[in-house]
Image (cartoon, rainbow, N blue to C red; front, top):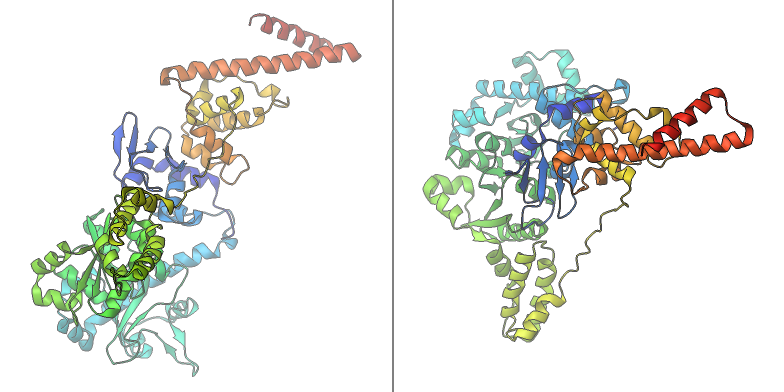
Length: 577
């Protein structure tokens, strides 16, 4: 997106955001001294190495070097763009995003307009269902009560736009806006129509509860039976989970999420007090779906029909999920009897029996080998080779060492490797050699240490003596130090995370981020003394450089009276060292 969000606004957002609260809403943090810790969400972390500092408004992982402020966390954890992250924080704090150049930010304002139009048309669909016998008859037949209709904002679109338009007194201005944003369309014959006409409407909400799209169920045998909104600036089907907003209103971090196939399944199960059920809008599961689900729970349970199509869909889902499984994140599978779906079976069995099915869901490892062993004869050496060749590439996509080795152990025994030496060789000869990315490093120098101390403790700027008159001297790192020093003086309450944000997209940001996480190996109460000592040493070097310059100038062409007084002052200052 073109155009800029003013830096003052981003700084204000970060001032209002408590990074500990932001991360704790997504991960379980435990206090450890002044900081908070948890297992890192960005790599397979066996011991808590992810540290969050309230004082610095900054996070850092000692295992994988993931680091940053609140904006960086949302970008990494939620897979958002920079603009989406700023929008997320703005919504969280209830403030509107300003732009330096409004004309060049059509994308953002188009999104806001879409949210507004979707909300308005949703209310009209909802209102319309009260006037429509056919829709209410269908919902009653499916056993959906008024509470669920209200909870999921279920509505109805009349069989013609003209009928809908008149019944709800839609004005021409609103109609034109709906046409402009392609929410309704014009046919080749010039008639205005709604793509959902004659359908029950299931509004699709994002994690803030905003209406971003609709699903429609045909009541007059028109095909397709179910229809979703087209993709827009605010709706991307491969990233959206239906019902997740309703689940999170009940429980911010559910123990597990049950994934079903359709809107009605979600609504019916919720009505039967299964308050952790979601769906993927009738599409096959994507890697984005899996990541979003794992961000909200540690256990995903996929519920599929027990026929071949359901089993195949479950297998494809497992293969996509393997890279995201860890020691704490897993998935299970619930396969229903033939000719049954979640809606039908819970009405027959009731909540208690259905929950027993959930409790007895097939574990990931059991389901993996059940499928991988299909049509394999373990008494045949050829089949054993085939099994190994088929299973190992899939097992190797799992990032968790523990789970990967455990599955290899099971596989090794299946193909008859019992000898200890052969067993060890089998386990490790095909081990993926993860190339650990060596983080970018820089050499420690007094100036870099000084800058690092200031970035980590911006309040030190208040005690720094002025050395701005020497800013033109060619001392490496001095201009950066002086610039950061001035920024800290101009913003007395600035934190590390906010300070670094001001340098996003600059050439020095990577160096500054390294300095922000340097361990200076000194106790907190000595930081101020170390900062002043370093500053005075650098100040002395500045004086020595100035002294050398003035002495050289005196030999060549002499000094003015002002310069003579200056060199006398420098000599006096340096003699006190």
